[in-house]
Length: 262
Image (cartoon, rainbow, N blue to C red; front, side, top):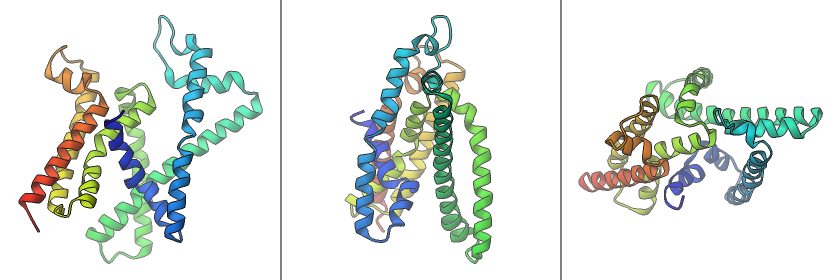
């Protein structure tokens, strides 16, 4: 937590497109700073909105969540808590709020990804003369494609972790290091250049996706205890893996930037 979590934290707060878009949409720099401070204070609330309800559900429904002769189902903690503690009216209201929150999160991610694809890749490289109407249509098609890919990815989530929160943190730890390394060296080191950034992205995403693929393979086909695959993909915690990936990306960026001065 003291080392690996900072990699994902820097990416989420400073580089996540869904958050950066909102900061850039403010009217003034003062509003942008104030919104960041407010978001930081609001981030304290997950302790009360997520951790405490989970502790309460574990205390009240321990037999249902962790049966003696069955499979543990920690993801059912919140539904069980709502089902057994709220009257029908409040239960429906909370379910509607949960669905709305999921839709809002997905909308933010899809919109951010579509804007990056349309502005940076499609109109930037593929069709620079594309009209605004065409860009909007391409963005809608890209959002539909992302929705289909999201549905196809659901079985992988179940393989990587039986807890959604841990899955999300693991994916951030595997994919955030190259972005974080480019950001940090770009801000702190004047010799950092685009060549080093490209090399950092190539190395970081190759290693990150390799770690993710190896973890999925080892979950489906458990390796021999004590083997290299067991050490790298099973016993090595994802936070340590994220830290090592970030160090590798920083070293690659610095070495290539030093060797290829622009």
